[in-house]
Image (cartoon, rainbow over all chains, first blue to last red; front, side, top):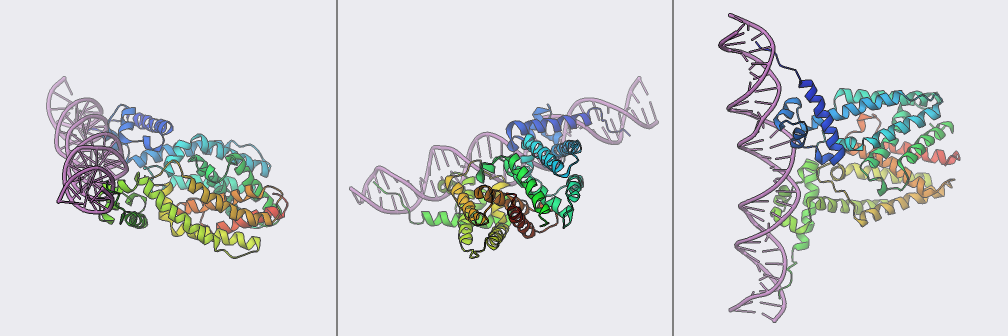
Length: 196
Length: 196
DNA sequence: CAACGTTAGTGAACATTGTTCAATAATGGT
DNA sequence: ACCATTATTGAACAATGTTCACTAACGTTG
């Protein structure tokens, strides 16, 4: 019995994910088609479906890489003062998302959206919330720091989600980074006022 | 020379918009196809394209109706105390969006997304921000009440946007209404603490 | 070393999509 | 009664994701 040949199988998979990222950045969510992707890595649609379950799966794989990168950046934040740390975390988040807006956008907007998220995705987000909970807890709020951290992430995410699809201007002319700062400062002010 | 016949032209247009709304509510963004819509109103795809420029235009028309309905509900809010008024406005917004999540969702998520928004859309949103600015101004904040109103709308919108596509649980188990309340209360607390 | 079972890769085919357009049918003014 | 005008049709086109019988190539086994 013969074994599977796996010479450049993994390599092709990796190249495909990289190519998908490029297609997204160049042409937006609609540019990530099975045929375009196949052509990018000099193969055929059939092979793409041999490597991935569906085009949505390709997108999700691109996104996985992005989340890993984000985790690394978040861990690189050095500030120890709670306020400065929260501001720095927000800055990292905003910068990261806007840099990769094409990828991020495709996940929510395009024709390749998927309804369910795998466990590793949930775990990544959970980890992110954990990093926010820490400095929030250091501010000694009245309420559960975890819940407040969730609310803070939600605020900042809402801002960048709109900015990523170029629709922030429907509501305001303020810049995403300024808005994120304001959200963080407001949370801190409310905690210090004894409201939370 | 013969005139255009416009007997049931407008009626058909109206029925079509209504049918589109139904399709969205029953089968999500993907269910709003040209052929399905044509069948719903007992006509053909060609006629749909005679009434509307594109399928995106159909979706935008459905959304226009929704925004008009929202404006009516917002104007019906009777509370005069600033805090209670802001809370009531947030409640109306959350309830409305979640009730019509299918329509709202299609605008951002599905394959029928459109890149630009017409003027009437911007005007509606501008009006909405105006209604929020009023009670915010009554709280005598240090900063520009309009900018704060924009930030508040952004907070609440971020929450319902995620909830509408059933992805709020990626971040938190808290309920949309509770989160909206928290956002309003935090804004008020920050203003009262003299932070904004 | 040769043969064969297993597997990766292919590309044609299918169903659906939005969208267009020549042809047809119907209408209301002259 | 006629006919210019216009709405409606439905076939056609291009592009999409996805499937699958087929081919080619490989590594194990005798």
